[in-house]
Structures are given as structure tokens and as C-alpha cells.
Figure 1 (cartoon, each protein chain N blue to C red):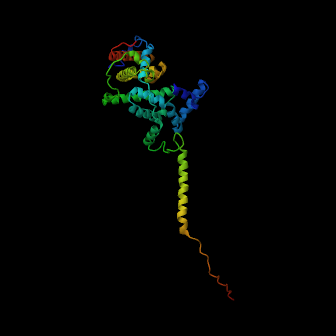
Figure 2: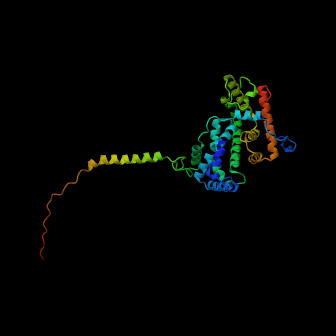
Figure 3: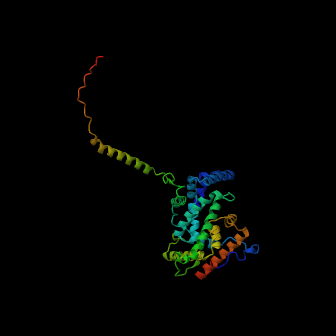
Length: 219
Length: 113
């Protein structure tokens, strides 16, 4: 992942692979942040903006909301960074702040019945599920297959949007952001076993929902 | 909708979270990939912090900019020089040239005691 390479290459994180040096530089960086060092905070935003934006976009499913939310995440981080005790990695803490704010926003949007205004459009036709396996426009040579792939993506997006926020959260963090179970546990504040069972149920529900909408089994 | 808390007390009995089959994962990745570049978040964040802190933080937009606006400094300097030059050109005719004093000096007269 490009932005992970960016993080590794950043002076703050340089340490030649030595964990202690990395931890020390992260501690210094956090100290600067806690002292409200504006330049340090600029560095933090530049380091994490892509990852935070991508995460909140996947959680909220709407670009306009995601842009607003990504900014709000960093404002809250700026306000609360002095309370960060360093029990977890900085990146994990940032994920936790992002996810919690997203879940609050999702509840707020649900109350306002905004979910009905989702950018997703109803699916007019159904296509074979095989087309959705990592299908992108670039991968499809024939226009008819491109349309099918596009429709399947819409179905999957719709099914993800229909998942409860708690299920969506673990699914996105594990299967899309590639975080470990330990990190998931720190972000959600749940025991390992609960994270695993929730993830299992999230995948099952998503799969069943997609199959129901498409009328076919995922192979 | 399913309650996330439902049955999670029985985690030990819950099925282990097996890794998803690749078809599900690649389907997810395909559906949620982001094609458009992310927006520039930094400027918006700075603006919000500046407003909410009532100018305590990020009060000086120039020094906290992502890239120092060298062109702005240069243009401002040139503009100031131009204003000074124009002012001098406009005001100097009004001053005129100095008029020489033609009066002869009065001879000194010594007063006898």
C-alpha cells in the first residue's frame, strides 16, 4: 500500500527497522503533537489523510460526507492528542477515532433518514457473480461485461451499506484495510473472540445478501 | 437488522472467523475501490481549527502553508517597490528646486564702549 510505504519512509518513522528507534521517534512526534506543534500536526495530516479518507469513505459510502468527516477526524485528533497515552500505536488510535466518529455520523444520518438518499442506484439487471471478483473497468475488455461488472459492484456497495455499522466496521478494517485481529480488538474495544465472531457473521450476512439480490451463489 | 451484541456472549462457541474466500474479498475490493484522488484535507482542517480556536491556532496562514508561498512574498516586494517609485515620480515635481539667497550680508558694525 502506497501510503504505508510513505509512513515507513517518513523521517519520523525512520529507524532502519529497529523497533526501539521507531518507538522513540513516534514518542517524540507525539510529544510535539501534544505541545500543539502546528507543523507536527501538518505532518500528521499529510501522513494519514489518504488512509483516513479511504476508511471513512468506505464506512459512510458517500464522498461528500467522507470529505467532511475526514476533516472532522483530524480536528478531533488535534483536540484530543494530549490525552493519547501511547498504549497503542498512533495509527491504531487514529483508526479508532475515525471509526467512532463514522459510527456516530451513521446513526445521525439514519435518524435523518438520509440513508435513503444514498448515491447507490437500484440495480436494473442481474449478472453472474463471477464478474464481480475484483472486477474493474480496466479489467473488462467487452462493454457488456463492463456494464455487468458495474452492476455487481453497485449490488455489493448496496449490501455493505445495509450492514449494521458494527458489522461494517470489522469487515472494512479486516478485509479491506488488512488490519490484524489485535488491531481490530484495540480499535473496537472488544475481546478477540468477539471480533472474530462478529467478523464471521458480517461476512456471512454480506454473502447471503449479495446472493439474494443477485439470485446466484458466490462461487 | 441483526443485533451485533446478539449471541456474542457465547464467543467460545461462535464459529471462528475463517479467512474469507478470495471471491468475497476481491468482490469487496472491487466494489469499494477508490478511483478519484482523495481531497486535500489539510487546508480544511487548518481552517476548522483556526475558526474553532478563535485564531489561537493556525492564525498565520502564510507560515503554516504546506509550501511557503515564495511567489506571494516576491510579488508583494515588487509591488511595494513600484508604489514607492510611482509616489516619488508624482511628488518630486511639486517640491521644485531650491531658491538661491541673493541678499548681501549686512556689514558688521562694532559698537564702541
